[in-house]
Length: 502
Ligand SMILES: Nc1ncnc2c1ncn2[C@@H]1O[C@H](COP(=O)(O)OP(=O)(O)OP(=O)(O)O)[C@@H](O)[C@H]1O
Ligand SMILES: [Mg+2]
Image (tube, rainbow, N blue to C red; front, top):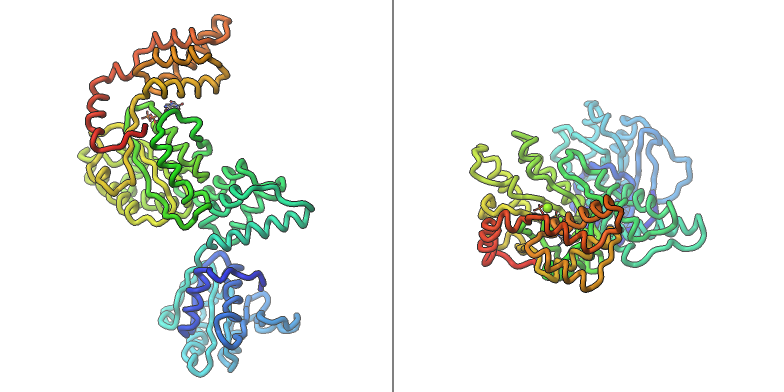
């Protein structure tokens, strides 16, 4: 059995200790993380009980061996399940008898009876049998002697030890130290939550062993690998591309709000309660999606996108189950940002779908209300008429932000962001002129004008300039004109229901 010591704070350790003390004769542990289960039991045998409890381990390949002390290799016997159970029944040696993968042999009535005998004579001799397999269906005869134990995933402290061990393994093998910084290290430890010990170590190894470094640039790949371990139904999509605040023009208030809560996600203040999420409402093309991506970017966590409309349309009759599974997956993948784009499309009411939308909304709201995990929801919507009132009631989301058309200084920011991406430079005066020339434009329209300007310049064999962009502005009929009335309504509606993102 491995001798690496577990931190005393382990939740699993505490729970299992309580279970062992309660003198249940048969403990069932269903897990794929056998090494961790064994490690836990080993640590408890010496720690919890005042007197030392011997620990025996059995597999069909190696038979029964004492594992808490080293008796050399000479003790292998009883590899037959019937034999080992008989010998446990006959012994008067109290102890923990850990039987690995006994489950295929539980079909045999003789084995079942032997186990029952052991359980029934527990008062005479405290032999605790622990069954560990990936899946165990216990015969009815044994049920009332038994307790199931659920192995928790490694906690932060345990994950930290695992990553440190991988780093020191690398250092031993290659000489020198792993190149990293505190922040990346903490983020990796945060992001490995919800995985078995084996997977935690495997992913940490993957990052560190490819180049002896653990840097911010390594994290997206880890998050994706973790996501791939869990993505079973495919309704959640992993978005590899996140954004930073520098990609998002304006929204100063939203940015400040997000920044204030960053410590709950990046590992620097893990005890801080995680916020539930925000709803971004507003004019289309003004950066709601970019803001969702930036939330993941600045929190340094994976961005998962939940397609509510697809759940609704693709899984007729099964949409609720699909939603529940997707939300459960998000919980496992925490910390993460769960981006729900156009939430109104999934939960719009009154469209004669025999209540599916209502039930989806109910499922989502219940999850949101009870959520304890670090899943930060960023929902976006631009059609207020389709939003059910329950969704925007106070206390559902932490805040509802309104994203309006950008004002001149913000348009200047957005212009610069997209000009820079295309290697265009404008003088300060040009920026000011351009920004005032695109009054009423959304960020998307500003970006589009720059893209078109680059094409136009190329077609004329000219270097793209402010004049080309001005030209494009002149040729655009922005949404704010086309949809003037709708936007006015939206603003009116938002006035006392939302906070300006700006
Ligand atoms: N505030 C902004 N800062 C930087 N870029 C922006 C901003 N607003 C819009 N853009 C650009 O316009 C594109 C469209 O914006 P985005 O998809 O974020 O808008 P949206 O509000 O989500 O719109 P929709 O309601 O149509 O989904 C983005 O890819 C981005 O390049
Ligand atoms: Mg969008």
